[in-house]
Image (cartoon, rainbow, N blue to C red; front, side):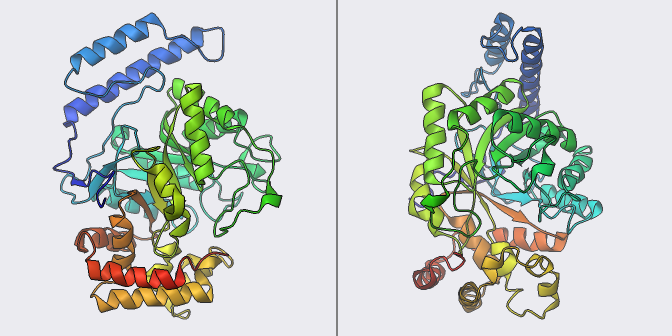
Length: 448
């Protein structure tokens, strides 16, 4: 059970095609995508419903040249494998993302502070260090930076774009997110009072993201939060009175299908989603012949476990829906580093929980602070730093694909990466036993 669903191999051991093979295959995908675009432009409809004969012949010819590869290029989504290998000597491990062809590092770089807490120069240094160490994926969003503000909207993407200019695009797994339902962020769209996850909003979001990022495709496009009502960001219990009409799952997938056919998106995923939502998306994809989600980006840490472990873990299991978990806030918004325990410390004063009053306040509640102190005591008992304990726990979960870790400095990121590499793998049984004892007492102490 321990290693179920994870490849857990070092970069040197991973069955990754050599650079020449990757380049050929990626160029093949680009060639096919361009042919589809030309065919689409010639069609009378906005999107074509049949595959041109020339496309089918070229696809067959390319596959013939790669008979040793068991994976086939998908006729509808034009998928191809990608595994960045910029950190040649990295000891990070890599996992397959759901049933996609993406092989992703066990750490994904989070970028939501770029443009708010980080300058462009700082962002570039953080990005470069991350990829030098073997991280091959970064996660952004049209809503970034956080906190969301009209004045700073889009800066994160612009900082990433200026860095991407000096990189090999096919060596970077680029993930971004389209906003869910919102009555407060209409400034993100040209003409919308309410953000929805419908075809018009999705298309506008992707077009603007591509422009800001300076690229012509997105590797993983995620729905940041659902169009329908769900408990979000610290809420745990579903309130039936808040139910509202929402965009049908099929309609959302149809919009993604169009973007995939156009070569602008490769894979799709969800975020802040529930078991019901995941199952509905998977069911709609299966029975309507639409693209299937490959990932879920939800909060997960020693302080936030129940929402995923109660039933999402079964839904996402490789033998069920096979959805890869991209866990955000594995350090609980920085609280699990211990820097907020002494509220008068310089680290606490510089931290986002104090810079932005009310932001992620669930981690500063008395019971959450109490649980955090207990976890820090366990770390000290076993000769670990608080960061090593928190990230070691997230790293070792059998259902974990990649943890999304953000940093406001290279030093912070170095500490996080080192925690992955220097902490015993897996954490010793006695450490896990102490973690479970605290969990039994506090469960999820951040629930609002």
